[in-house]
Length: 192
Image (tube, one colour):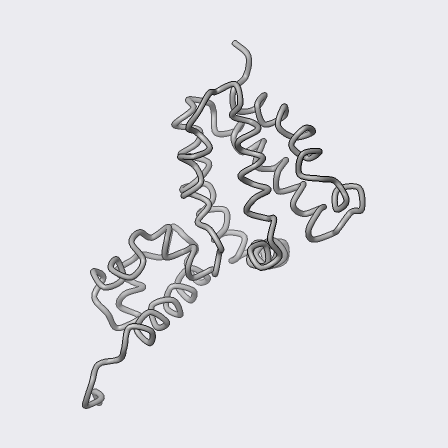
């Protein structure tokens, strides 16, 4: 039976959408979860979902409680001289992981992806579709090269923030940039 009286407020509606999104993304992965399906589960019109969150990417970032949508960083990383692309990429990556409150959702997702295939599928599809494919297309480099530097950077994050390997934990961001930027540059802007 439908509830009589006032419609749920914005906060309640937003939370219903986020709950539905978390469930759909977990069950079906990033690709399988549709905006219409999420909206239907939340009992709202898809237009309302777009009103609150914009795109499916932004909804995913909000549902996973990410401090930043990784796809939103791509334009600023790609802007500027190609010769400093590796450094911009590494600095942007480190900035996302810099604050404990900001890195917590990423650490949780890394840990969960290591033991839960549904979480791994969801992350894989999201990262591949919204970040890796866009960077590869924009730079006109094969996806394997973009995936290669992503693996390097996730490895640094895993060892620095999850395993907490002392040399990486104690290294400054500048030391990490000095070490990793040339590798990123090689992958993303290989010499002709």
